[in-house]
Amino acid sequence: MTLTVLHADPATLEADLLIVPDDPSEAELPLRAAFGDAYARAADDADRGTEPVVFYPPARSADRIVLCGLGQPGTTGTGSGADTGDELERLRWAAGRGGKLARNYKATRVGSVLPPGRGSEEAAALIEGFVLGSYRYERYRTTGEPVPEIETLTLVTEREDEPVRPAAERALATAQATCAARDLVNTVAADLTATTLGEETKALGKAHGFSVDVWSTKQIEDEGMGGLLAVNRGSLDDPAFIVLEHKPKDAHNERPIVLVGKAVTYDTGGLSLKPTKNSMDKMKADMAGGAAVIGAVAAATQLGLPLHIIGLVPSTDNRPGGRAYVPGDVVTMHDGSTVEVLNTDAEGRMLLAAAASYAKRYDPAFCVSVATLTGAAVVALGTKVGAVLTSATDGAANRLDAFVEAGRRTGDLVAPLPMYDLYAEQLKSDVADRTNVGGREAGTVTAAKFLEHFTGYPEGYPWVHLDIAGPAFIGEHRPYAPKGGTGFGVRLLVDVLRHYDPSLGFEL
Image 1 (tube, helix red, strand yellow):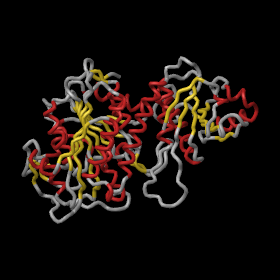
Image 2 (image 1 turned 135 degrees about the vertical axis):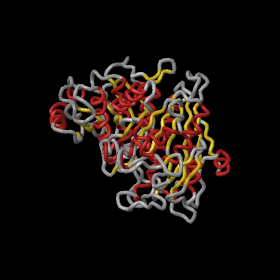
Image 3 (image 1 turned 180 degrees about the vertical axis):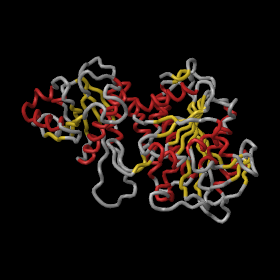
Image 4 (image 1 turned 90 degrees about the vertical axis):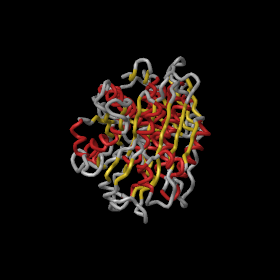
């Protein structure tokens, strides 16, 4: 997709479809003056709701104009009506609905109008919403006419000096990286083993310019990553430990930022077998944390962020094969500590523990782990909001605030949960250093407390954990996300990275 930012009269733009985010409070648009009563009637219909209204203008302009109502302030649920996050999300919703229509109409040349008085951030929201809303995953479809790809997207601005181009290009790169993460999440397990995920990551690295190293089973064994190897015992396929690195020459940080993503390519629960309906049938998505990390590193590289970033993605499937690890096993972990396995379906933390322990050798400025880790997060926060947790060490409040604010800016909403040391009591074992589950209560928190140990807490590196079990894979269409993988976390991580200053820390 080629992006153009153009100062022009939108009434004269030649396109298959022109998206106009319509707000009844806006000043008169040139389109309203150009097309008169017909446009005004369509605009009135758009003002009554958020469903797009299609208007067919006279010749010598766009073939179709789609008026996308922004809805009333506060309707996105991201904050108050006066909140910047709500304003940006309304624009994403409008552009996302327009993007879906563009694909339905098989448009290849699309334009979008930046409403009067809006600037760079609003332009970025429009581009993100359109690209994410026009996404379709059709790898396995064999019927119906193929839908052509959208070739050009033109953003029409009010003022010639509007500095929106860099913001629009940034939004395009980040949205495309989010779509790449969606593709990985939506790929069925038969086509995405840990080894295949490594190959796909190498292809993305080659395309975007970051380095990728995929460890073999022997390398993982030599490193002593007991948690990853234990989960892999029931599989017919090899595990992988995928190391990504974005290291520009002008990196501002001496100590790298490490992103850790869980990539269980399919999770049956192991011998602690999951039920099928609304559980195991969605478990191709259990690698969404790894996909978010891969997408974030790809976007960071394409944007040229002046930060040294390392991604660690431990990967395997979790199956009840002949040598599968069992409840009651004691596993020696990468840091030498021991874990009593009480539930083989609590496998993601076993993988992440290996990566979190390995990350210590980088002495990171901070580390973020991302995972579809607990069903308890869905119970607590639903499917639209992820959980964010951090160790109760210096800077904890600032870290949480940085991620919450990034979520409000991007629409990848997260909410904090507590990390009191008392929760670690639930992980006590009679036969080992700790158990891999802490019981029914506070499951998201105890999973994070399990991981926290492997960061070297309390003396270890600064660490933030994102549990994205709810919003990573959805069962209904949303304004700029179809059913299936959402790519949740990519834009959130990129926003946090963009606002991080190594000399000042997290910028709110």
